[in-house]
Length: 335
Image (cartoon, rainbow, N blue to C red; front, side, top):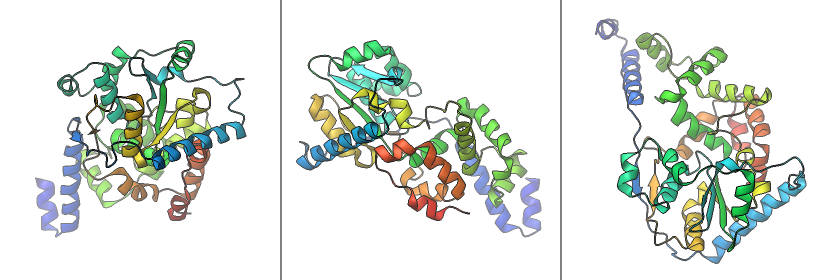
């Protein structure tokens, strides 16, 4: 209260507003996250159109071309990351779960297919992956290959997203809010590059309130990842490249869905596998404080061109395989 009184006495209304905003966001971030389940609209075309089928076929050809271009389609020295796949034998579905790419929605779907009720899932909102792994244990490569070559052939899919947008989503969800498992990582990021901390009015006020800035800036977060990449250290699963995480050159995927066309792509997967009557359309954990896509440029334009070039190198194969552009982020980055 003394701080508020002092600020008012000095006429520092702007700083007072920043103080209130900082306190509000800090308290909001301390709230435990809860699962948000929304009913999704029924697709306009219940049966996938030829346009969707052709688009998915074109994506698959593109991935095969890039794999061949770099020699990744050879079995020599390349193995599948088998432990990240979920196999539903009953419905002939195999999914590589890319985090921050509609993973919450499709974890929900796979858990429903495994026999969980919606009530059970809502009662265990903090551990959907743990629930899934009780029904879909991690497989070694031999077991996964056997499942992939079973008869009738399963539908093997992954959902991709622009790797830079995934970074923004991961930052918002794991770094810029209260996520206890990531508290240690936040402190390491803060210590690694203090010079990249944003000295804004908001951060100054947060320092007044809490003695230190609680959350790394986006440039700090990115530089930490870039450093790990340059040192050839393993990256966290939420920002590991999709190429490394799902090994698309070895897994022979049937479908490469995209977050950008998720409704149509998911509709295709459901119809092709025959689960459309078992799964009610749902959207799980959509950001409630603005979509990541809408806010992405705000974060990514805080980076330097050197950082953007490093990200292009890190996600080179993702960008080329899945045809994502980066020029707009390079254009707005600082020198």
